[in-house]
Length: 405
Image (cartoon, rainbow, N blue to C red):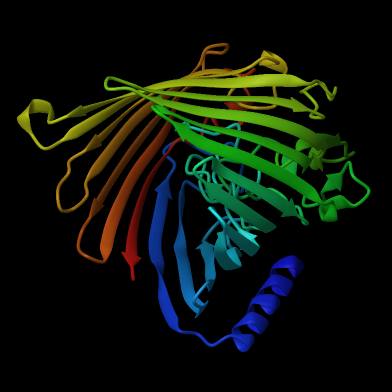
């Protein structure tokens, strides 16, 4: 939280130095609940969970070419103390201009970026840390301290990042559902002597050529995904300590748009990351996907998007990722009505193990300000050798009511 405090202090000083010409405050407030129909694995866990979420945001114009963006999150959870938390998602000053035929912009502060074209998860997306206590599928991100320079022109878009601080991953507490079978300690260990203050670097070039959109990226620094070191105890089960390694990462994301299908590719080559045996093992990983849009189905305004994605990690059973050899099939039904009704049905199948997970998601606006979301994640099959086996009894039904302002 110290780095967030200093960034907010720096933002406050900028507000004092500029004259605000436009100001906009907006955001969401949600009431959420989950029901876990299966008995919990641990005595501390409950079958019903709930809480409130507030996500305010502010945009201010400080000068003709200077703006400020702030956004945050506060969640209160009735059971999981780790899930009750606050975070500054974004807090950056943006300035921009032109340099000949090239446009430039600079963001300084806490920011979030997204790389990738796949739907289920994105192996090329390595800048931000994930906030795992928020949601197992939505992939919400923590704000990353950064200096982000973007140059763009007819030749494409080039981005560079200086990342001076590493943020650790969040995990459920002992009382939280969707947790590991072992307690994950709050202590964190780093391979670098500079620990969380190691200076990381990232680059990305993206462009569109005809029907092809592609991005090339590189990252060098502290891995956002930890491995876990066991700690043995005399009178209680072993615990796990997150360990963050130094990695080099190269990525490609590509999207090919044709009249019939949308083709998607994500591929990476990574060095410096250990496998499940604790051995540093350079590896490649790949996501291949295809998407088809069907308009006016059944003679209605409805549109149906069919999606298939295959994820593969060449380390296979030694992979630290849960997507080592998995097939994801989904359908997205948009009713195209004034309420913005959407229904998603997806199934994730592990092709190495027998695990299967079903995902249902329904969204609809109730009014101009209120909306509802119903969701279900069902662990249909579980293999004891699968990394996801810990959550085999954490299938849930969820409901959320959101007020947008």
